[in-house]
Length: 379
Image 1 (cartoon, rainbow, N blue to C red):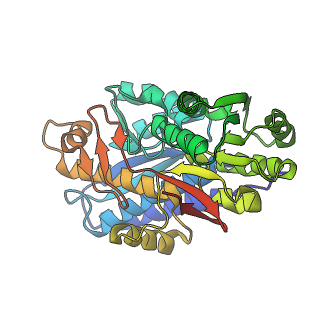
Image 2: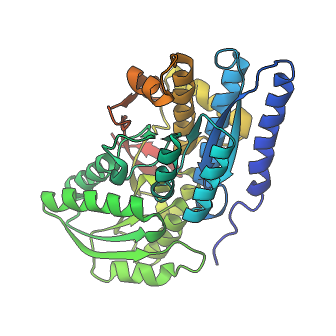
Image 3: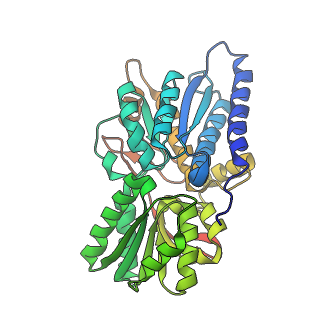
């Protein structure tokens, strides 16, 4: 039986947004100018809600802090959040609503599958879409209205493949990957296979599955372990990774379990417990970072939302600030995309965000493991 996920967060989701809009409205009442509307799209319910809620809250915090310092060009900002429910049709409807609400840009989507479904719509409307967490290579190197603040899957997959082969000593790997976010998992798998096989390793079993409450992780674990691999690689969200890791550990106490950055939210450790101890994941965030900008951000996020920001909160905070800085720098006759790409480099809470000519970003990444119930940086 799977745990009931985020049973109370649906109310938190809309309540938080309502509070933000009410606050903005009260302040705007003293200001005759309409607020600048930004959109957010992500999974705010269901199995990927930890990612979407973290992203929404990171965006909300960036807007609230900017409003506290006067907004942009004397205008305050308001966030309109939409739940894509990790469903392509619903995601397209959500983007259409944001377009109708005349948002100047959208933060999100938070998964590659939803980006693949909605980027064409954003392109037709010439709406800037800046994702905190989408990494699929399918959207790389294209001159469109989609930008992102992190690298494509190539960086994380190759870094992981090299570590599994060279440090763990793995030569035979089995893989489970989620078809519900196929644009991401297949892109990640393709890059990983290339790196791992080039080093001399082999993927001896690759098993697709569809994320749902009905997924049979017991059977999936048996299939992954049947070839007696050195390691198991899971390409899935935090909930499914935790559930599958538990089933693998019940059957094999020593096989290496590795995962992808999509799974690396605090929810993974909460649900996975001892089963995810030692899991190795390439990440966008160094939770041990002590630089002043990150500590200030983390303190503000904890005070506002009473939980750790994780990578979703951090990256959405950075993505939103890129949009706000772009708006502040936007010249007459210049699009927001042009303003952002003309500047190219922005300060993030933890590391700099550097865009190429297509709006793909270069950003620091870290290899981490779970140790004593916390993510710890390896190198």
